[in-house]
Image 1 (tube, rainbow, N blue to C red):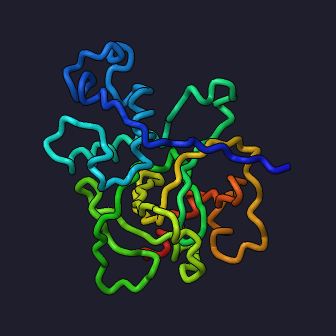
Image 2: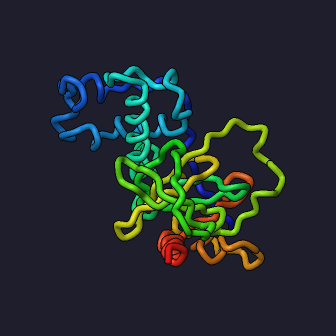
Length: 252
């Protein structure tokens, strides 16, 4: 029996940025603040973040009006919201499900491979940023260093780490997609991973995780805890510890 992971469909509906008007970034008049103390703890904030995540990050016109002085600051605020949404989002959709038995993972694509990392490991979803190469380092997994909120962070290629084929047929050439940079952490150590596309968050029961096929040729097999049936394909559910262990070996 195949268990299918369910994903959240995020639309481009207008987002009411109440956090900038009446929330902790605004005049503080929102009655929800009495219960949640700050907007970061509010489910309205989380839903807004989820909607913003699936939009072009460089399209200022698609963002709600915000009280920041520039479109760049508005885009930064939207990215902060989107990262926050990875850990908890849309509680109402789970009312009829045993929430304790569900896991959440962020689905993304590298080359033609759909992969996922546990949502708890994700700290930020951002637009691509300049990566500064490291001198005298020839390891193709380690791309260099990237500035993440003022901190230099190791950037690594999941495509190289997993030995994915980037020369295969371009199945996604006819779709409009947006490259992203994921920032994940393991045991307090961050790393940035450029990806070709972010799909969104899927929630699934542990029983839905199937064994990695023995026929899988690339290194995803040794870095995944299992696979999920999703739409008309499968997702390789990456094991955060294994990914970071391989990255650590590449840095030596």
